[in-house]
Image 1 (tube, each protein chain N blue to C red):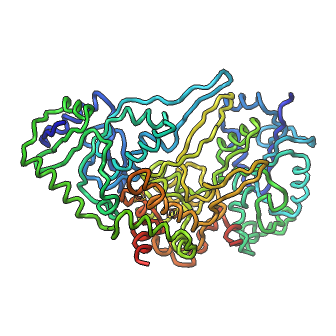
Image 2 (spheres, each protein chain N blue to C red):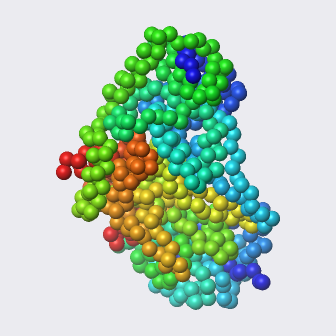
Image 3 (spheres, rainbow over the protein chains, first blue to last red):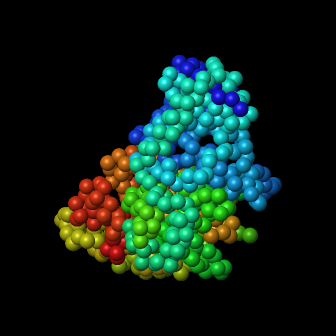
Length: 341
Length: 249
Ligand code: SF4
Ligand code: SF4
């Protein structure tokens, strides 16, 4: 694959040509924050964003996704994936996409996720501004981001564009790219290394050590109840997390007897998440206490999935820390506290 | 098979939720009438019934002792009772008077001694009778009522959210009110509305009441620490739609 350079002055024309050919999604401003949206004009793109409210997984795994439509005549699949480019994904979110790619494709191949995923070309980009609660530099440090087709780094006067796949290579056709010089490639490497130095928060220990000690704290009910004392069971820490992937499936009917089967994001912090039917109207909630639910999320992020994923199920984006109104969700504070005990 | 008989009843309320039932538009409403027979609906027809009913939809709160017998009589005749609208589900804004004693003079002046104004504390109708399903909201979401009816017609259990409004704000990527220096009740408020208020830049006031297990201690703490409320204002904040839940806590 190749490494090219495009001048800042030519960048808008590159975006315009690409947007004319295919829908392009990227970070745009929303009030004081940022979100991934379909670009309507090249100047909406905000590659200087710090972090988006929701991670890019929403494009493959929408918060509410119709799976089936049915009526008296039969059932049909609702999935209608379209080719698109997702531009400006930070590396921590690429690492999270790698995890959901694996989880939605191994064994039970989830067409409703993979259909959207397979039609998306992902262009990662360097982190120009670091969000206030990020710790991506100290979590899962030996896991590399894989699932992107190209990587864009802003340097003096333009962008270095490294292609990783044929699909990434194909994007070169939309812009006035030229081969990057060694100096430009070096500068891009420096820019990306510098972003890793700027995280405001930091895990103090390695993945293995954390996994072992956090798991050993499982039985410390007092600790978990204390950590979760202010928890609203609002599930924000789940909803905004790029590596959370639980969903609920519900049917709804239309008055004419047709209907749809829809899946919605679910979150293990909400009160009814673990409520199961016992039949005959009976039910049982196997994580009834806030502390149990809070513990479950930390266990999932720091230990339970490590073997399957090759690293922790947290990529250090800091969305949960910033999104928690009670400010108790921060994995760094929870983990560092357990490690210090 | 004859169509299930559906009746609407009202107690202490503005009947806005009943009016909302007339707002589906002709097409869906006529379609619905293919599947149910409406036998009593004060805002839309003159007929009433004393016959057994399959589904009774009750609006308004219980606040006059005189209404107890009528509620019990409806319950006796109805296979399924749905409380709809916040007055019927939790007491709604009627319960705002529950911590006061002078409201009658204040509201009705010289008429305050008229017998039909002899009301006590306001409660949801489940203070008196068993309620099978709840359609929350002030006003009620007519599509949610429809979805509950359609589930029942298909023999399925309706699914009524018991998670906070934060879930719906995050799903639609609304910038959190607290991040903009405001307050919000979303963390303790029952979702199901789709969170339109914070999306429009105004706080959630919990018009669907609280979730089953709201963390009110943490709620007051966050209002004080993050939104600059006085402790007293924080403690009373939930009163508008949730006075009974606050009193019970
Ligand atoms: S975001 Fe915070 S308050 Fe909400 S469920 Fe997570 S830990 Fe609890
Ligand atoms: S647990 Fe928090 S910091 Fe880690 S990936 Fe999820 S939202 Fe980001």
